[in-house]
Image 1 (cartoon, chains in turn blue, orange):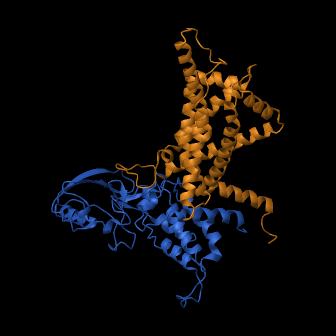
Image 2 (cartoon, one colour; image 1 turned 180 degrees about the vertical axis):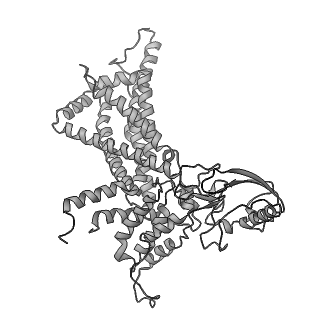
Image 3 (cartoon, rainbow over the protein chains, first blue to last red; image 1 turned 90 degrees about the horizontal axis):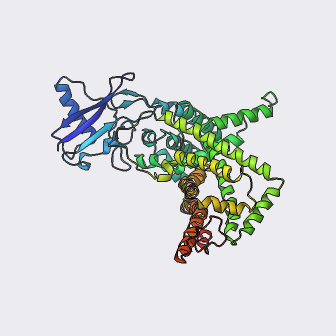
Length: 249
Length: 260
């Protein structure tokens, strides 16, 4: 396969970036998208040019490190698929592909396609945990959890914190991420005692990081590689509203 | 915990924190928006009396009854507050949202449930605001004509410009509401797999009913005027029909406007 790539290149966080065009030949349909970029980078390195910086880690679709907006879609054209699990068979010979970093004021570009997503870490540090030790996994059924709640919590816990929801949202809102994290813990008995404080503090940190608000266009849900439902945003709204009304402090 | 801040200060602090947050602002916008929708339902229900009779006496009587109600100024102030809060928060959140996404993508595509309504909320909102100003100048702050409010409304809607403005205002409102109602309910936390379909359809139906109901006014008046013009020209009388012509043709579309 032969491809024309328009890739966002930016020297560092303070410099202005721009698109550069690369022609890549010898792309195999079996390659993953990141392997295709590896091929490009090998060539750039051989030519003595600077390789394209992009984030990646596990390349198994579970770590949440890869990103990229590919032809306007975070993680590319496949639904419920991370960039590392996207394969070149999804594209056709001669195709032109635009590759951009996740765009959000709260996710500043560090270099080329790499953005700083530590805002998510600070939101989690603000309340996305349980303060007391809950011990090792309890014996089955020793802590009763309704099946429905267990399933919903598990679905929410599937969030890998990649930030595609923010990248997809026209307001760069982090509501799906925060909704998933708040839901995951609020639905389980271990997370319930601190649910109000958690909702208040995580939303406060979310706002402090400069994320936007939710307009209910559901772009985040469509872009999420883990298929997190916007029902979690509605649950976050309920948790936050209730916490604002009823939190004793 | 007697050493805590006094209850009143805490309440104020909490309200400020709540309204200062993105979620709080959206919740306040949703509540004010939904209350404004309730007003629209009442406004439409009352105004449909316009179609009850040819001399608009039922409508004029309804208007007079409203004006004589001593609670009317209170209701008007309430509406003004709802409007100002809704608008103010809309501008605040829009500014915040634009700051959050300062850089645009070179290539972008809508993958979720973006609609005409959802992507034009600010524009349609501003159009509705402009329309409301015109509407208030037309009927609230204008001296009442001796032949009654119904006749005033009919004259206004008989002018091509008047009918155009009212139709545009109603279209903007319809597009705004097509996204607004479901979005507001979702912001207030209304989401349940069993009821989502119902909520979506119900919200769209409500928007559709309000749109058709309000659109009926300019459409029926212009339609009946055209009808009477055609009738008079075919009768070859040559005399121009006045907008307030009491001998307007029957209103075949009115049932349609009320029926949806």
